[in-house]
Amino acid sequence: MSIAGDADYLVVGAGAAGLAFTDALVHHGDARVVLVDRRPGPGGHWRDAYPFVRLHQASQFYGVASTMLGAGRVQSSGPEAGLHERATGAEVLAYFEAVLGRLRETDRVVFLAGHEHLGGRVVRNLSTGATVELGDTTRVVDARYLSPRTPADTPAPFAATDDAAVAPVGDLPSRAAHHERFLIAGCGKTATDAIIWLLGAGVDPSAITWVRPREPWMLDRAAVQPDPVAFQGMVASLVEAALVATTPDDLLLRLEYSGALVRIDTALTPTMAKTPTLARWELALLRSVDRVIRAGRIRGVGARSVDLDRGSFPLEPGTLTVHCAADGLRRPGLIPIWTDRAITLQPVRAGFPCFGAALVGYVEATRPDDDALKNATCPPSPLADTPRDWVDMMAHGMRATAAFMAEPDIAAWAQSTTLNPARLPAAADRSPALTEILSRIEDAAPEAVLRLEALAAAG
Image 1 (cartoon, rainbow, N blue to C red):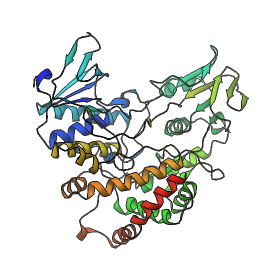
Image 2 (image 1 turned 180 degrees about the vertical axis):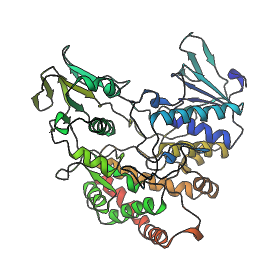
Image 3 (image 1 turned 30 degrees about the horizontal axis):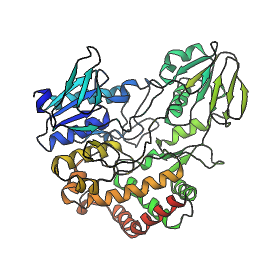
Image 4 (image 1 turned 30 degrees about the vertical axis):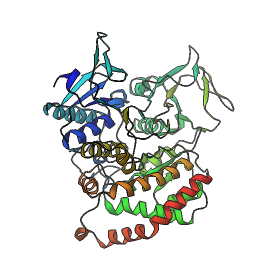
């Protein structure tokens, strides 16, 4: 394929979303794609991830539609026995390398590593400065709109004196042996992973101080499994709780009672609801850390003290401050996925960005000429930060799911890919328990969507 003249699509970003879109587009059509990334290979932010990172969800929910990540195994031992396997960062990167290799073997995908997008249809080689301009009919696909920020590529959001020991979370394995005490900055998944790694390495909980400016809601990993009874049971709990909840906080508390959500401190109502998954064994470890500072965000770190929004606190000599406080997933606002100028990848159902990107790729391949229809079929869903955001995300996701599942071919495709967390067995193969759960969802869902929208609007 001639890069400059033959490409139908320029996909900017070779992370999970860009690869999931390209994979579906190529497998369901005859498109020719130029895929570019500033990094030296595929994988996006996984190339910057901390060494002990794992997927927080089941492996088969992640990646591209044509090739399952992992073997779909259920763990038979360890603290997550009975739950599906979760890939390590190294396994995710190896998988994406293999995916890219198969895409290139089609002779319809060209990958330009070490290139940046200059706007329009122009890309530049970061090493040589040479530019390439693609043809006028090439459509640009933005796979970076929601690219996460990580501690590896984001400076710590606080000042530090020259004598303070501060490190991004990725340096923790190499730095931990030189320190006896640790200050963890952040309240999301990265911070919880850092604490669990430290405790697993033998650090005593009393040696860890956790600056937790907000309390997070998290999904119980046992409820977010490639098991229709588990996943649809969570959906049933959501729609039924929506019928009676009076506020977003009330809804999430009801979901905690049903077993879908967890919080670290049950005496406090969380104000953060990005909801990564967390296993019960991890929750128990996090609760063992009782040196928690709730005085806002860190503003400055010195060798003997830390300054926060609401006061200063002493640090013992030799404390390593671990930066886990990058923004993570960004929330720039929803825009139409298809416009005259570009395709902007965003989630379609609530969460599960790989499924959304693959869905957009399938719809683009099978409905290439009607952007209005495509936007109506795949309206974007927002990402969440607060409980109100989470409720809004659920409402958008349920509306979007109803829209794309109303299309028979899309519904058939969605039921064929393990990326879809709501995938169902054929009706004849459904257990009585699953049939009963689906009936509950069918009864409650229409009113539940209206109630979720009302709760989000009232905020």
